Length: 388
Image 1 (cartoon, rainbow, N blue to C red):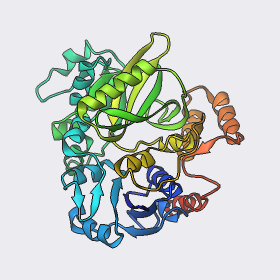
Image 2: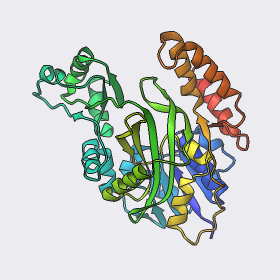
Image 3: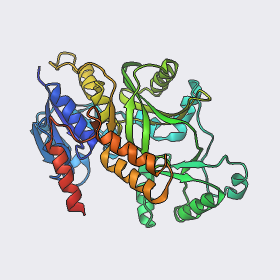
Image 4: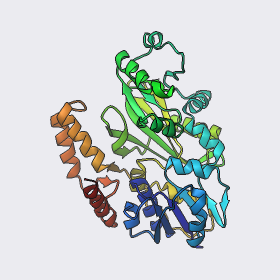
């Protein structure tokens, strides 16, 4: 039984990795991108490609799924997952393998996630959700600066922020009371503010699990070595962790089981080796940004999801598990330039040495570049030139 799987959102390294993974597993992959220049559309592992239609997904997706004879649908972006959660489990003859509305709502509501995490014994940061009428000065006297500001549900803020002429910053660093009051005034026009959490020391630890019927069928974990921005953001350099943290893995599994999660997700922590604490940052209820690292290490989550959903499918096995390190080149280069201009991080000399050393490492994996599938990297470079 050879499957046809449609992937909605092949414009990023995440979608590209899903294409490569399923294509290498023997699946016929149809990709849908936002434009003809989607990097996943250049992959040799793609069977066919189309550009997404205009308007709501319900207006054009069923027709595209029927045309590609899709047996299953996967999606990458949070916005698409939200839209698909309101659609049925089947669209024609295609199974929608994206999170359903109840679990997805719990994951997107960060306050709800923190509450469930506490109930299963996971440590969470001190948090404050500002509301209209709150006394910010009184709060500033008690908050443990620095803070991290995150929107509890970023997608719900897109329209109000746009109407007020404000951009959506999913994560911000709040160093002191002056920065806190600046944040208050910045978002005062919409009368809503991001969730404020105490900053957790240590390194970023991601525990990835594929959940099925309340248990994990595949596990993988990694540590963030570099992030962009330097103060905290996307992972630009990361490596796998083969062993350890089993007790925390059990808590991550319990958290996802309590949410009722099915499929892949990443539970993200800050881990301080000195104190031994694991502080929950968030749950990514989707294919996450460092998925290329998991793929390089032989932890193939898209394949696992298809194999569990279609047990009779003829899929090539995933490669043996191995230690891997992966770099997201553009954010890593931006990180280096930021340190050279403004300082911070590990220092200028160490940052240069690290960047050059990683570039010379023949075992380093990359988010986009793959010698077996070179065209997406060339397209990505062309896209950057065109944007310039």
